[in-house]
Amino acid sequence: MAQRSAVVASKVGLHARPAALFVRAVLDSGVPVTLSRGGSEPVDAGSILAVMALGAQHGDEVVLAAEGAGAEQVLDDLAALVQTDLDA
Image 1 (tube, one colour):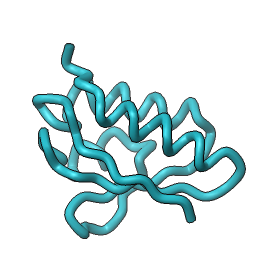
Image 2 (cartoon, one colour):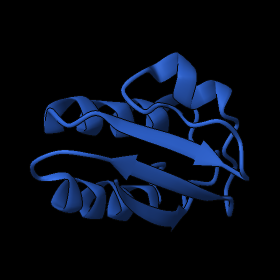
Image 3 (cartoon, one colour):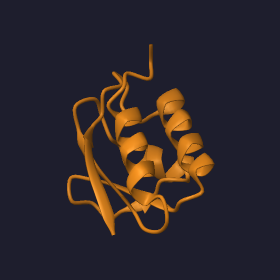
Image 4 (cartoon, one colour):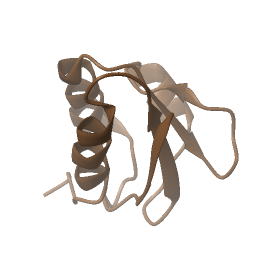
């Protein structure tokens, strides 16, 4: 299983608009991705409710994980998205 760590750059964390943009990118990738924060149980990164319930705030480190064809590139792209201020 491939993994990437990323620091949340959005000032409101992964909530509302940033979470929606992130989840859309996960779903568009076609690769099942999980997301965890601070050693928490991984959640389905394709679920807006699960991502928002994770409570990832600005500056928190999250871990993305995926398996399958194209997982490495998908994780690179998603990590870059998390590390972008999506509030702007």
